[in-house]
Length: 277
Ligand code: S5P
Image 1 (spheres, rainbow, N blue to C red):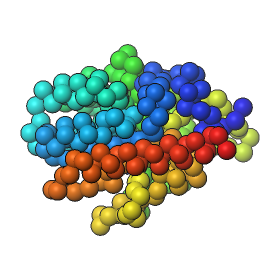
Image 2 (image 1 turned 90 degrees about the horizontal axis):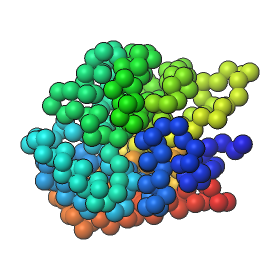
Image 3 (image 1 turned 60 degrees about the horizontal axis):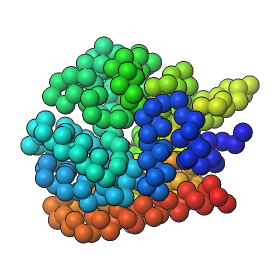
């Protein structure tokens, strides 16, 4: 059997054990889009305007809900209405990083009640496997999916080597709730000993640090092109923030739409080349 990244998204959708991963892969196929836009703006109006503009081009909207200055619970209802209107899933980039009991409370409760609306969330592996147990106790009954941060796009990241390998092993031990990774490359052989071979697990790799023009920012972010990420590194979904919406101070919604279309095309062409060639 070929490595998962050489199979079509449609094939992988039919066989994935995690409900949120299946929904995501089905959405990717329906919309011919492996683009996730990361909407990192602080005003609720800008947040909704960007999502409404990019909605037709994305499979997934990534949020940092705690940066919105004028957050109200009504914002979640508007986000969900846009998710219905444009047919995309929601990924809250919460990066949980505490003991199981605490992350279960942070995921289910508080102001944001993330588990009630985010199909997907993510976690650092620093605390060890108990972070998965804690989050799964809340998310699995709701059909949610978890991504483990196995690597980061920022310069000097400590998530390398044996840390990344351990994250891969933690995922393999929890394939029902862990649907994949935030990483920069395919992960199926990472962390295997010399006598182990890759199993049938299909972990999706969602890759941030994607830009068509810029190579980075002034705070350590590093960008690669959609082609490098999808074709050369074998990741499944590109996550693009400022490459799509530019500077929130000078939002130009028509330009946001154009950029979303451009990244969608670049990501999809790279996928077709990977799978069909
Ligand atoms: O390694 C990472 C992991 C994440 S989730 N590097 C990242 O940049 N991210 C997130 O992706 C980051 O928090 C931000 O929301 C987004 C990248 O935004 P951009 O504007 O640099 O494309």
